[in-house]
Length: 176
Length: 366
View 1 (cartoon, rainbow over the protein chains, first blue to last red):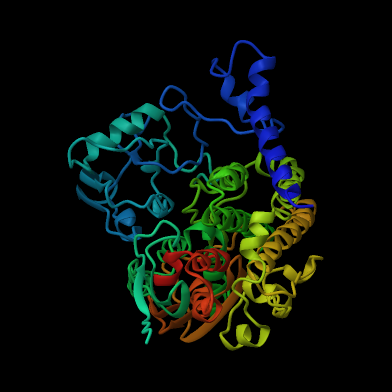
View 2: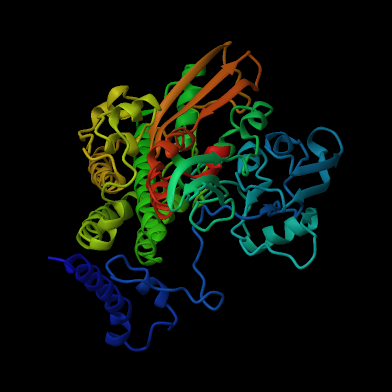
């Protein structure tokens, strides 16, 4: 019968529209109440939903790969980095460049430049690190008003302070 | 006496329905296509040459960027090639994780292929959004496991980057019935659509012998009636331990390719069900040095990527960098038959046929 397929399509679309708003009609407080994201992203809910960004945000997964950060030693408050240069060699794009001073155990990082504009967030630098010095943060709003995409050591430590972790790879199940 | 001439027009590179920066030079007789010349290379990034100056591990993120819709499959093919070159054994759990990821990628790709085919036909965004909703759930799983939705960099030579998080498998088990439901729903509301059938049945016919002659692979080949699947023809990884069929169609037109993709989604879900049930505990990777130096030699490994046969050819000269890093992209080779499919059709059909081949321009140009 001509037109049957089109009618079926419209029926499914209608079902989706109903599913999108049914939860609202059934439940008050409404859709954009706090804690509503979990309810709306529930798999058994039929229909589409929109996240009202930036008022609402998803919580990122623990493994989310965002901008690089530097970690501190919890006792001394100094950066864990020993400027061994493993991350510099592991990076496929030459995003990282660093300088350090001192020999052996006293070696410390003095300058660390991380080019955010060229980073592809592959996490190979973190995997190469043996000193729990760097980790990828969950920062994803990385746009800038100026062309200052090169983050120095202080900027990276500032991001690291937000997360308060001192070890690499806890979310990944690989700690050394 | 009436004098007629053909006209030549450009379609693309900035055309909404060419799936990227792809240009076609069409020679038209009225509305009918007399000749078609595909022009590509607008997205050429030199990934093959760039990868030759990187180590084997550093090239893994580049494979994500070949076909950005199915990055896990690209990782997989590259990892298999490196393992073949260096003779690395992979733990069983890693193989299961790889199969799960590859089949999820196939689902993602076919969702997009079907959705965007309808987008090209003018069903503006309704099927795509329904597909995107399910795809986003799968990409959430990818993000949970690898940290990134699309640029996964997860499957590495020797295994995978990290073990699956604890909530991954329960979430996947919960998802599989919903994905089956999604495929059923697509069949219910799109397969019988009269407008779609009028545009798709009999359009872009590709006979089986021509498909073989052009070395077309993947759903396009199987829609022409050739039962060829690398997973069955030359089993890699642990695909010989799963029970699944290789569906084929007879017609070889746009409609058959659409049905073929839906059938393959069902088969992928079958494999996923078995893999989730049987996944063992154990190691997730063999330790591979970051500056891997494979012995001198060459290796070619191929897998059944969602778009067709994806191969990597690597030549090692004993140094940490590959001497030659060559990729056989399914999109480019499937695209080579575009002219044959389009000849004699109308201009509007070109868009449909291109959508039914399902290309990614990043994979074509590399």
